[in-house]
Length: 132
Image 1 (tube, rainbow, N blue to C red):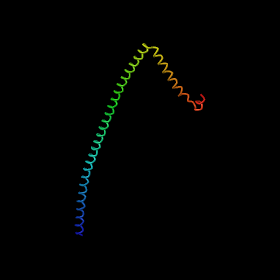
Image 2 (cartoon, one colour):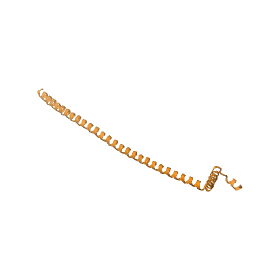
Image 3 (cartoon, rainbow, N blue to C red):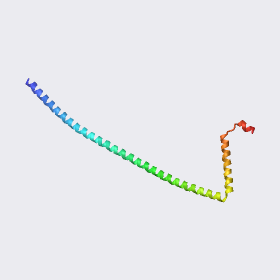
Image 4 (cartoon, one colour):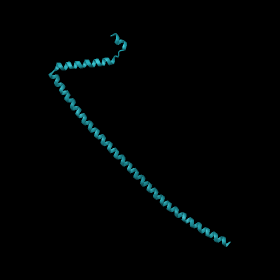
């Protein structure tokens, strides 16, 4: 019976030792898991910051491009207005100096536009063209 008791005591001691080792291992895993979670959170935060930075850079470039296009469109519009005003002054001057020539040119252009739109608005069938 004593041998059994000694054996049981040795087993019990070994079980206690195993239990202590398991608990120590558990604590180490918890600490490592906590560090891993913190590291993962930091990594996710860094990735988020990188994405935000990249998107902000893209937005800045798009906004800069839009500003450049707007400025270019304003410049082109200004030049078109200058050319239009110049053409209007020149036409006005020609009308003052040569009214009959200007009137003849306007009538000629009107006739050409009228003929061009008349042919487009009333298409003739091939049979009708032969009769005329």
